Image 1 (cartoon, rainbow, N blue to C red):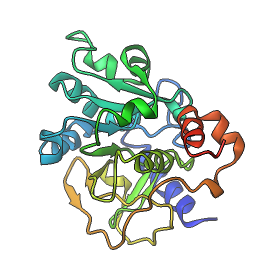
Image 2: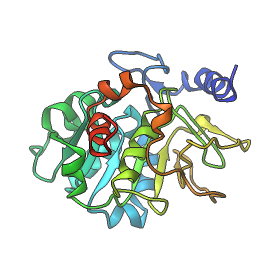
Image 3: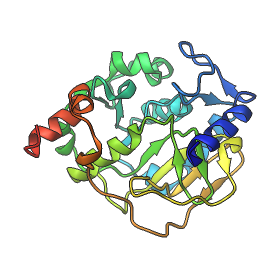
Image 4: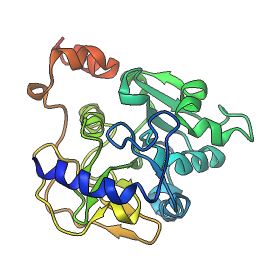
Length: 245
């Protein structure tokens, strides 16, 4: 069994006690990164960051753990790009004024993103400007910033696409929002495709990570099947742009 799988299984047992069940997947952490007790406090830690306060465009994953962050950004009129579930319908842009006052909570949920968000291609996103920060959930994250998702690698794909077209680079702050039980105290080795985070926001603290190496850039096309390219619209778009498909 791989190290990442062992870590996930160990953390998932603890996470069940503090996680908020998903309406579709309940506590099936292989399919959903859940909201958790104290997520509002972790969000407040993110709000205190200069990258957040000064942001004009950000990327936020659709993880349940980031519902509070998406809601507060909508209330503050801060635009952000968010992916649809498993990127199967590409990306949505949540713009200032796109959500009626009082509906921000619903718009921050996955169904609300689909309802209020405007579909945008990679080409359209590239014309909006660079991301001031990127926020993601995680199944677990080590103290040195190694993030484990559900095991499907979607955030790695998103990072690869965005760095390929210049929306993000090694200087872009990447923030993981997790419960304290999801933080792995030991240091773990990073693989060549791991996206190391800069900051870990939990209900009890903000952990700053001192990165020891540069993050990868672009898509590793040799690691992606033709079936996966065909199933994910922005990946298919990028493959066409690069003459791969």
